[in-house]
Length: 636
Image 1 (spheres, helix red, strand yellow):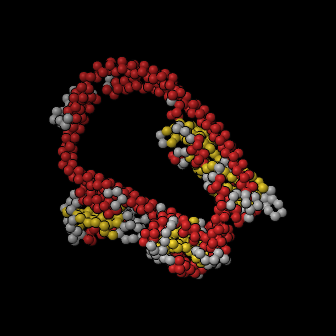
Image 2 (tube, one colour):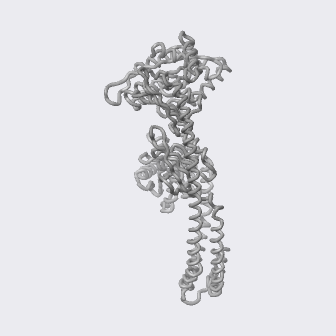
Image 3 (cartoon, rainbow, N blue to C red):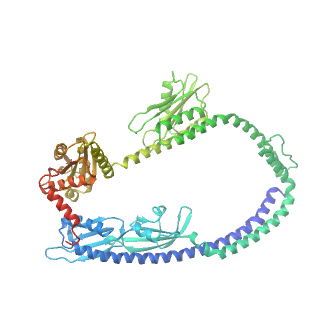
């Protein structure tokens, strides 16, 4: 019988049959018990989740009656601000007010759930109002119900509102009772539908880990383990029988393998007969000869690759330093290909041309060859090309762009005399360029994140957080060195009417155009920021109240001259702003903002489209009214 036949019989009798039986029996028992346990546990938690949701909804109904009592007959123009005050004071998640046919006012989180409803019937002078209130967001609800082996996912309309595990945010959870995987862990899922805002359906999915049922299936595991042990004993018995038969033929190969492990390639494996073992011995001896030759070649190349690996390690250590990454990529390319010289060119933005970042070696007389190789590489689908200048061979590889369709991030070009670049060299350059491209992409992403953290995406102005931090810094400097700091608060007049009449895209265009005017008006030392909504602000260091008034007035007049084209093609819109200005040299930023806000409120009351200084007539009244509105109890 041939070795293949013997091995087949051994495998079927000793391994395939017993392990198939044990695997089917054991895993079926364990899997069935685990799924049943997880389903029961998930169903119990789902029942609790429904009860908790309904409890929140009942409590929200009580809060809705309280809100309705406070805002039932409040003027519509004050509903939004008063609702926000009640939202903050009562610790609610969301308040939604339906004012008859006049529309809906909504404040708070769009991820709020478990709403409660209160309806105030209309009268002759007041239309019917419906108040929908929520006390909890989906994330809070999910975190409250989650446990060590339980994940809660809340969705509505295909959108994930909240999850107790970030991995479950983008996992498709099927309806009813089903199974999903988070990473390598399996979960049983029970999903139920509950009511949400505006008649929408909120789907609460309870994911129960199958790992939590391990203790409950101990008996099944013991049974499966006993059967497996029995078959292992049977396997051991047959192995001993087969071992005696094969030992005489396997021992020479074992000894030869040990010699190869010690680096001894001198003694071949003896071959006897003409069966498969004899053929295997011949192949083993051939492999030994090839390994010996290859080891000698690898020993010669080891020193070169040590230097390349060391430089790659330095590239990782260089972190987010673009110039260091490019320099190390070029050095590694030259060392790995045994090149004589080279250069690396890169661009920071897709609109910029390539510029040489670093070079090594003597490039005299190779300018045209380098340019030709780089041009061919950029035009090639493989991203690598070669050129020849007399007896000097040139190879260029592209650093891939971040986004498809953009020009190359850069190129690495190397040269060496007398020896062309083979396929191994080309593959090495492609691999190096791929890793360098990933590193440069990470640098670009880091720069983008750093920029977005302090920049408003819509207007391009500084963010609210940067405005607050910069204002506090300027006031600390002003307190120390006794120079004034001023701020100007701009509010676009009638902005809500623009959104209601022409749509939010038109409103976004108005915000961008106004932001452009503020950016062009302010000085280099000033900071223009989006304060929130349609409000924008300027920080004016080393500027007193009169100087700030002049700057703000110039900006207001420039905005007044601004014409914004209508997106529907029906002409253009005129824009005006009301401005409040305040200045000081000590205290906190909140005080200065409050003074400028009071002046802005006075400008609004005085007819809009004007600039008012803090301290002028009307600002004290405006400040008192703002304070009174903030402190007024709910319901007045």
